[in-house]
Length: 561
Image (cartoon, rainbow, N blue to C red; front, side, top):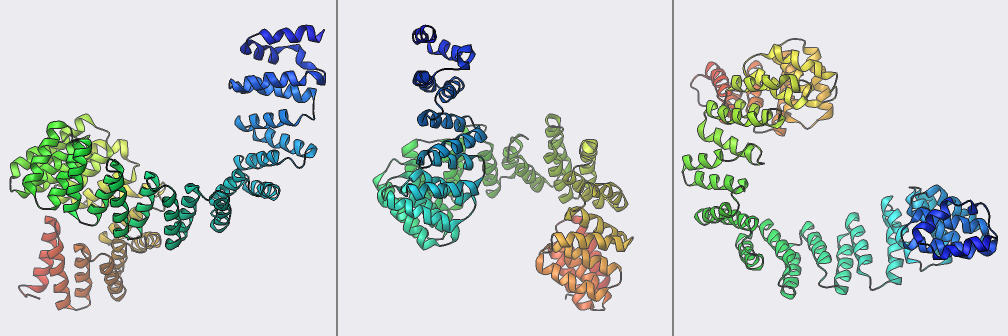
C-alpha cells in the first residue's frame, strides 16, 4: 500500500513534495528500503536551498536507516549551515561511534566546536583530523585561525608553514606568515614572506599595497618607492599605485614629485574635484599660492558645496592680505560643514569682534539648537575673546538639556570662572561627581577652584590627588597640586611640584604665573620676576595678561630681569 501512495509523489513539484514530506503522516515510519528515495528527495530540496524541508527528509532517511553514513553527514552539514551547533555536535559524535575513522565527520565536528566558540575542543579535534590526514588544508586553515584568535603566534606560524609545504604556490599563505612576523616585530622575516608572495603574483595589487604599506611603516621609504614605481611601470593605469606613490611622496615632503603624480592622475581619471583639491594643497605646501587659488576656484566651479576647498581659499586670501575676501569665504561655510568650527575660529581671529561671532552662532543655533558641539565651540571662542558673558548667554539656553553632560558642564564652568563666579562653579560641578566619580578633569576642576577660593583645602587636595592618580603626566593637574600646597603654605612642596608641572607643560602661562607666586613667597624675588615675565610672554587672553602684568609691576617695578 505504501508503494502505491509514495511513488506517484515523484511527479509532484518539489515545493509541494517538500510540504507533503513535512506534513504527511507517512513520516511516522518507513521500511529501510525507502531510505534511498527520501535521500534523493532531500538532496533535491537541498539544491533548491530549502534547508528546512531537506533536513526533514534526511532525518527521515536516518529513521529508516540509522547506519546510513552519507545522509547523516549531509544532515550534519545542514545543522552547521543553520547554526544548530549543539545538534551538529551530537550527531557528529553519534556518527563517530559508528564510523570512528571517518575524517570528514571529525573535521565537521571540529568546525562545529570552532563556530560554537569552543577553541580548545576545536583544536583537540583538529589535531585528531591531522593525525589521520596530515595534508588536510581546511583543517590546517581553521587551526591557524584559532591560534591567531588566541594570539598563539608561534603555533599559528608552525601550522602555516605546514600549509606552505603542501601549497607552495599559494601567496595567501605567505601573506599570513608575513603578517604574523610583522606583529611579532620580526620585520626581516616579514619582508622575506611578503617577497615570496609577490614573486608568485608580482602584479597582485592587494599584495603590492600591503607590502608597500609595511615598508612605509618600518621607514623603508626608498624600498617602498621603488616597489610602487616598478609596479606602476608595468601597470600604468593602476589608480591605486598612483595613490600609494602620491601618499609616499607627501609623507616624505617630496611635494614636487607628488605634484607630478597628481598631474599624471589627472590624465588618467580626469579633473575630479577631490583630486584637484589635493593638487591645490600641494601647491600651497610649495608656496605657490596663486596657482593654488586658481585650482581651488576650479574645484568650487565643479562642486560649489566643497566647503573644505572654500576654507582653504580663505586661508590663501589671508596670506595675500585680503582680509575681507577671506572673511567672505569663511562666512559662506554653513554650520553643518565639518570645517565650520575652523572657519568660525578664523572669523574670530580676524575680526576679534565677539558680536560678529555671536551673530554667526545665533544663525547656526537657529537651525541646530541641540548641537552640543556648537555650544562647546562657542564657549571656547568666547573664552579666547574675553567675552565670556556672551558665551554664557548661549550656554544657559541649553543648560536644561545638557546639565548632566560632562563636556558641556566643564565648558560652562570655564566661562563662570572667566567672569569670577568660582562659587557657582562648585555648585554646578559638584553634583556631577556622583555620575563621574573618576573623571580626572572634573576632579581637578573642582579641586583647583576650591584652592583658588582658598577654602576646603583638604577636600581640594583629595580631589586633585585622585585626578593625578588617573592622569599622572598631566601638567595642569600637577600645577593644581602645587597650587593647593601653596594655599596651605607648603611652599617647598609647591615649588617641587610646580617645576614638575613646567616640565610637563612648558608653554602654559598660568603655570609660570603660579611659579612666580611661589618664588615670591620663598623670597626669590628676582626669579619670581623672571617667571612673571615668561608668563606674560606666553599669555594670550586679555584678562590673563592684565592680571600677570599687575603682579609683575607690583613686585618688580620697571626692573628688566
